[in-house]
Length: 292
Ligand code: ADP
Ligand code: MG
Image 1 (cartoon, protein in one colour):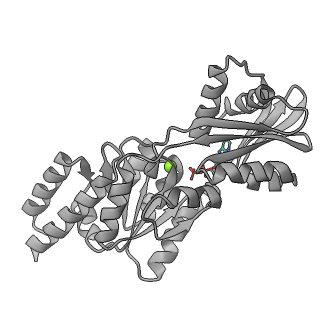
Image 2 (cartoon, rainbow, N blue to C red; image 1 turned 180 degrees about the vertical axis):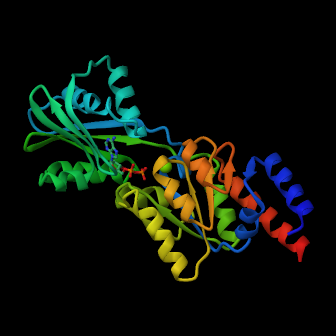
């Protein structure tokens, strides 16, 4: 690549809301055939809101939400924010938590009022060897709406679930359609439940879903695809996504996301609008043509 054409391209990219870190990223992007997208904060707005509370017999919604919010005070996850905001809106106070532990990709746990309490996904409940048939059914109803479900366990019983909703960004649908037309295979990778992932994907042009992915596994998925001869770009926003962004041939961070994601990426979409990937691809192809 000539320095001039690359300089022109990075300047144009910036005007279009795409920050291009270096010439290599732009060159590599012309060869990418697979685009992996994180769900939360990348396809969706990343500002989940409390959507529902379901309780087991003899439990009140406010008590379930109170315990959930108490645990989430120790977490920095976007889901924690949604639950804390929900509790505040209802004027609920939280209780002190001891022995707090964040279980990566699964949830949170600790002691509240002398009782062992845990909040998280089905994998966390499985780890605790807890099940609730009726709450599992309620969970599926919310998952089919695209909501993220978290179960609350107190000692040996699942006493309720909370669900949060995170709307798809206005710009996502059109961007994915255009990216498919440009020849990308589009894969969604998410730590969220498979059913929730499918409900979100059903509204979008997505070729493949990898759900229930632990944070450490996103980079491995990319490695495997690369080993099969694919050139892979990964779009993500979270601290969790940084290793995958670094592993990808081209990492694409949301400017609205975590700093470490931005540092690990070759491109940054200033406003987190996936339409920036479409513009970057056209720019990348045009730049490569000029060089040849
Ligand atoms: P994502 O790909 O959405 O960033 P994570 O790997 O962070 O997913 O989390 C996967 C799942 O683990 C979440 O969908 C949620 O069910 C559960 N989880 C993670 N962190 C928390 C938390 N702080 N509170 C409750 N549940 C959590
Ligand atoms: Mg995310």
